[in-house]
Image 1: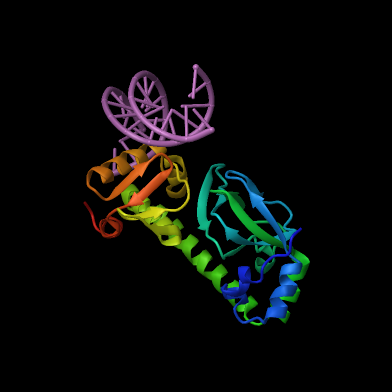
Image 2: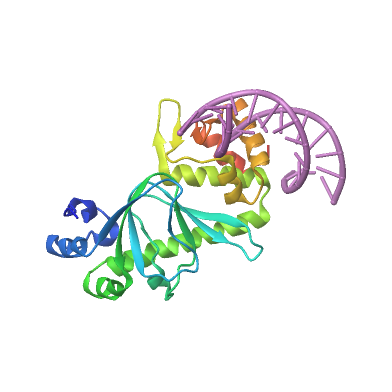
Length: 231
DNA sequence: TCATTAAAGTTAC
DNA sequence: GTAACTTTAATGA
């Protein structure tokens, strides 16, 4: 295994307060792995033996409801920690993580978690901060699912993905990883047919441009309006 | 308003 | 070609 470059971690919030030597130590304990699109990094309910940091690519985090269907609870973008079950006092993963695009992640054995949080300043606070933000976002999404009309839910879901992974293009902001209508229906608790119809309608109105597995938002403001107002 | 069913069209491999 | 993905229309809760 080639040595990992220290610049991989230096800019990232959980590691920003650390010295070079500390980052070196952390990297020397890490394992780097590549995941093809569609591959599961870990599965809900399995023993949480490692925790992860996404270096490149995008992940979908999926939970199975008591009813048996799968919903996408959130996406992970590069630079974020994930699979941090130890932070939740759990010894199994609470959800499944699947690569939405080809991805690269570092991982460490969970037994290092205690070392990291006690020995490395800023690591614990930053980790718990992102964890809190994520739980808040999930809460928000869930209440939204229960109370808002379908069009608003889908508009919110698209905006969330744009905020997480938006990338400017000539015509607008594109979602940087492959998304199918089915994926969006899994995020919003509706059907792929409804998603398809709405995206087609939005395309007619010049709000988005979409093709197979690819969405560009050409009028983000109009989408924001859809999440709040009727029509 | 939205899910379901069915069918046909389109694109990627 | 074929499988995967998308669209469209009809029907009914």
